[in-house]
Structures are given as C-alpha cells and as structure tokens.
Amino acid sequence: MRNIFYSSLIALIGIVLVGCSAEKYFNEGDKHYEYLRYSEAIASYEKGIKKDRNLEVLEKMGNAYYFMGKYEKAMELYEECMANKSAADKLNFYYARALMATGKTKEAKGYLTRYLLRHPNDVVAGMLLSSVNSINERYIDTSLFTLEKIPTDDFTGAFSAVEYRDGIVFSGEKEVFRGSKQSPWTGNSYLDLYYMEKDEDGNWLSPEILQGTINGKFHEGPASFSKSGDVVYFTRSNYFKRKMEISNEEENNLKIFIAKSEDGKWKHLEELPFNSDNYSCGHPALASDDKTLYFVSDMPGGYGGTDIYVTRFENGEWTKPENLGETVNTPGNEMFPYMHDDGILYFSSDAHNSMGGLDVFLTYEYNGRWMKPENLNYPLNSLKDDFSFVLSEDNTTGFVTSSRANKDELYEFKKNAPTFILYGRARKKDSFDPVAGVTVEITRGSDGKVITMTSDKDGKFEYQLDVEEEYHLLCTKIGCFTRTDKVSTKGKKYSENFYADFIVEEIELNKPIVLEDIFYDFDRWNIRPDAATELDKLVKLLKDNPTIHIEMGSHCDARGKDHYNQVLSDKRALAAVRYLIYKGIAADRLSWKGYGETVPRNQCVNGVKCSEEQHQENRRTEFKVTKL
Image (cartoon, rainbow, N blue to C red):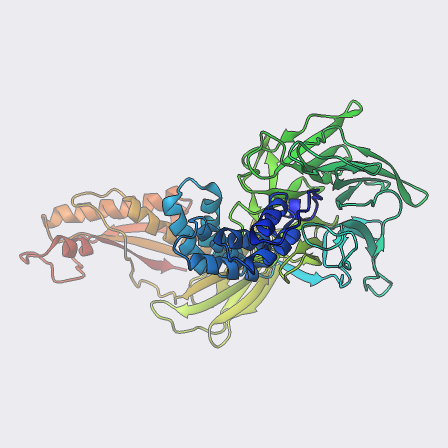
C-alpha cells in the first residue's frame, strides 16, 4: 500500500455532496481526493465519468488507485490519459512510477528520462531514475534473507509486527459490510492493534484484539513496547475521549500516545507533548534504553514528505524533537524507524535508490554523524512497498511487512550468513594443463586449524570459507616450486566466490627463468617501478621456498662496447640482488652475474639494425636455481 504514513493511519472528515450531474460527482470526488479519502473519491468519480470521461478526473482516479496499491488499474487509467495529446506532462512521471511498482523498470526509465528533460529540478523524479539505473545492484546476493508469510487471511491488510511477550503485536484492518464504519482511504475497517502468538508446534494462532482503551473508534497504528512490556507507545488518529480534533486544513492528523498495562488491559492513555493538531507524529520506535524515542513526522522544517526525528526522556520530560538530518531524510518519505540494540537504525524510504516503492535501509551514527543509508536489497526488499523491519535480539530473525503479494502482509524472516567458496586450480606453467596430486594446506587465521586437501584429476580443489576469517594457502608438490596465497572474508557482507590459480613449475638446477617484465632504461641500472612489481613476485617465490638459492643474471643489448656492457649488466644484476635483500631475502641465498651482450634473445647483435623494442627485449634479468 503506497504512502503508508497517510494511507494506513489518517482518518479524515469531509462533507458528502449529493448530485446527479457529472460535474457534481466530480466536485464530490475532488473533495474526497483533496482529503485523501481515495476509496470515496473513486466511487464519486466513477459515477461522473459514466457521463463525461474527463481527462483530469481520469488522472486523479489513476493517482487514487496508485495510492491504494492498485497499480495495474492506475496504469490502465494513465494510459488512457496519455493517448490524448493534451494530457498533462506530469503523466510521464505518474506512469513511470506505476511501471516501477509493477516491475517494468526498463519501460519506466524512458518516461522518467523524458519527464526530467523538461523538469530537471524535480528531485523525486531524479531519485526514481537513479533507482531504475541501479536496480541490478539490489540483486547482489539473493540468499541473505529467507522470508515466510505469516497467515493473516482474515485481514485485508496487516503491518508493523513487533515482538511482545510470547508473540507479536501488529496493526490490521478487515473488510466491513456496507453501512459499517469504514476508513475513507481504503473502504475497509479502521486499523486496530492485535496480538498473535505461536502454539507448541510453531504454528501461528488466531490474532486477538488488544484489550483496554488502546483500541478506539478510528485508527491505531504501529506500536513499540518498553523492555518490561508494560508500557506501549503507539500511533492513533487525533482523537481523545471520543472527541476528534481537526487541523486548520480540516485534517485529522496523527499523534503518538502512551499507555500502561494494568490487570491485562491497556489503560491510562496520554499523548506525548510534542504532538500537534496541525501536523502528524507517528511510527514510534523506542530504543533499548527506554529513554530514546524515534518517530516520523511531517512537521514544518523537514526535508520532504515525512522525516525521522528523535527525542529523549531527560529530567522527567521529553526533549524537543531533533531531525536526523539530510543524510537520512530526503525530499521523499522516510518512515517506520527501528533502533536495534547494536545501534543500527533501520527505516523505510521511497528514496535513497529504492527498488521503486518503500525499501528497508540501515544506517548508524559515527562521531555524531549519520552514515549514508544502505539498501538491504532483494529478497528482503521488493518492487513493492517493504517496511516495518524489526530484528530480534539474536540478530538473525525478525519481521517485516511487504505488499509484494498486492496487499500489506506480515513476513517472518531469517537472516542468513553470506556464503564464501574457494575454488582452486593447479596447472602447469605457461599452459592450462591440470596437475593432479598437488597438496593444498589451508590454515585458518583465528585458531591455526589446518585443512589439507589435494587437487583432483582436473587440477581442482574446493573449500567453503567461514565469515570474518583470514586464510593462508600453501600449495606444494615434490620437485616443484611451492606457492602461497591469502584469502580473507573479513568485512564482506555479500556472498562471494574466491579463486586461487596455482602455477606448478618443476625446479631444475641452473635452468634460466626469465623475469619477463623487468626492463632497464638505456645505459641505466636502477630498478624501475614496473621492474619492482615483477621482482616482488620473485620475493614471494623465495619466501615460499626458503631452501633454494638463486643466481640473478642480467643481460644488455648489443649497443655500446662489449666491456662497457659487461660492467653495466653486472651492475644491473647487483641492483636486483640488493632489491631482494631490501625485501627480506637472506644475502647468503643470492648471487649475481652480468652476461653483457653475450646471450641475446633475438638477432640484434653487433652490426644489426634493430628497433628500440627489440633492443629492450635483450635488456633483461633472469634467475636460476643454483642450490637446494
């Protein structure tokens, strides 16, 4: 259900006009539409358009259906309007919004782009386009949450489940017969607070309405309980002791009330001091200290439709509410805050790159500043509205509300740890030929546990890594160079595959092995940055194989005198050895030799004209194992 802050909670009073002409029905519908009584507005409009299919009225009907969560019907009306060349330009925005709600994000992009070309300063439209462009990011890891719907078949809508005693309390509405008291927004009953718990087999029992004065004639919405469970903060329409209060705009706004449990019933209702008859306050969320309260309001001075505020109980009274600021709040709607014991704030927003409707986000305060909100992604979030996220103390289970099945319903979720798989491969150097029988030791950093395995006939091995761990990999085969690697899952929130590619190379004494990318500038012997990168690989190889001794050999091109090149190559080989020593390799494992221009790799010898690239190929460094 779209725009939950209003659609689920506001009870408005208006004057019903009776007439027979299309204009009278349109005027009647406009009155209802202006005061957000969408179900009544549609009923009046329907009577009028039978006589006159007025374009402006059809557009308002589309909006009314959209806010009631009937997106397909809204799209049908928008399309009829857009077929008319005189249709309002804003319809591109409305239609795109409905397309996003039904999963047609690619189509929505075109309409939003077209609209923004003419209205580049429309912040909300810009946010929706950003959401469309980033939609694939929302599916980065679809295994992090497992959702199971809670059976509430007797309700036309149920939302905002919170833990209470051995079960949950939620807000729900039911279908009512004509003549009964109806919510003018949806045509269903007003919202009440219900309690539901599981039986011994884990099955949910039938909900029971909360007893006492907590449920009244109009809307009661999201609730939040103290740690002891005997104090509740809840949202309700602005009425008290049977009296409905109306704002200057003839609206009945929302207020936050407090009640206390006595003899199994909720009594002693009081409203909080920062409420107002002229703006709404709702969606209370009490922090674990029982003294900090987060809530939602459209009070003046905010950033958009609804913002999140915080107030604290100090010296026997609630402090002046503070807006959480523009990092959290946007020109869109931020709603349904929930502060977990670990200091993470969860809330829902139709901005912040959502999937199109309300999405659940998280943020936290660091050094007095709120961090950029993070989308919890699919499958917790969907293309429809997802909100009222609460997390149990075990940090792995909780509840969320979603309209993904075309009405607001309660879901129980399990938070799964990300999965990390290591895929390894052993292959011969300079080829993809697999090597079987390679021993791989995987050492876990937290406790030093060693897991040993061998590569199969395809040279492969596989291992599932733990979360928040570091691993050291050791790959060995008799007569071959040992190779090592490191893998870490620390700080990673999403499932990921890791790949280890081990090169298996036999150790042959006195066989030159060219370090392909170690080059020198003409007439120079200093180690260039690109050469240092390659020498670092040799450093690792020597550390992985601490029993081998090597000789570094350096070669020059044919330019210059033979004696000079001999001296230059000796300096280059020595420079490489000094670099290895600097990187921690013992000097007694290293020797060097300059070969001058005596062993070219190509035809560029004295008297042969060659390019600079061909000469540079001969300016190279090699190593060979001299001792095991």
